Length: 141
Ligand SMILES: [Zn+2]
Image 1 (cartoon, protein in one colour):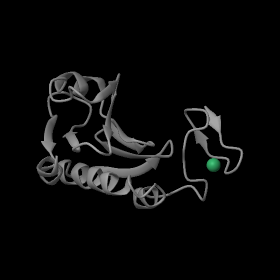
Image 2 (cartoon, protein in one colour):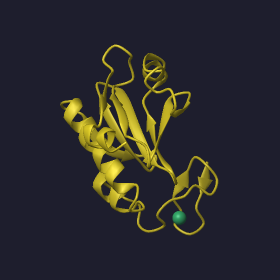
Image 3 (cartoon, protein in one colour):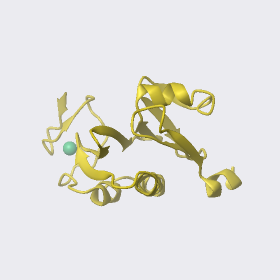
């Protein structure tokens, strides 16, 4: 745990990059506070999650967008060069082939901003996970 001396917010990693203003209270505020190159990806990820998980509950927790339904959560956060998508270990295993070429770590997968945004929709179990290649990004790639 690290507390930024400027804004007093808590982060998992020391010197974690963030917007030092008022802590965002909604996911839209969170997205607004991120660098411009991250925003389209974050907006898209938000849209995909909300569209694919009916009734999902959206909030900010641990300074990140968090989506919860029936006690299961997924979340994402903007990093310098990628979006970290915290999907759960089972989902990462389920889609290990599709995620080949993307960096993964335990329960997270990293989507570089310059690559097609591959997003799989899940609530922490391999069963109800499925994926969607963003058509627009895939065409451009
Ligand atoms: Zn700060």
